[in-house]
Image (cartoon, rainbow, N blue to C red; front, side):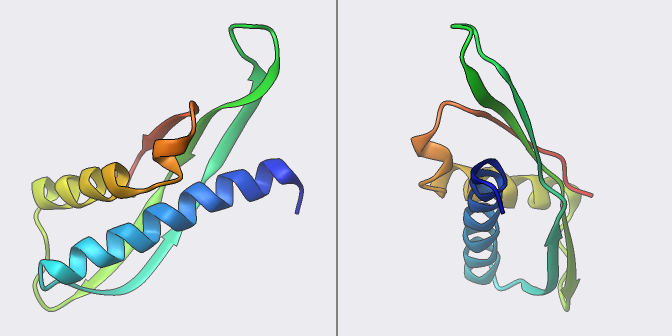
Length: 98
């Protein structure tokens, strides 16, 4: 794994762990979670090579109570707000649930 892949994986993993935590606190059971995260490596505004954008594409399977689309959005929003890695980088992070 190269450093750029590790960077994308770290953001994805942090989001997943916070998502699972938030779902658990709301009494939701996540049976499966996968993410096809990608990163864009390009020159930033200063002309330096940088991972400028990471797109997370998480897919979850729940058992029992199923969250609504609105609740699912709230879960991702809260997970993103709590993710310390996302809070530590200048990279744009986009979440596109599947």
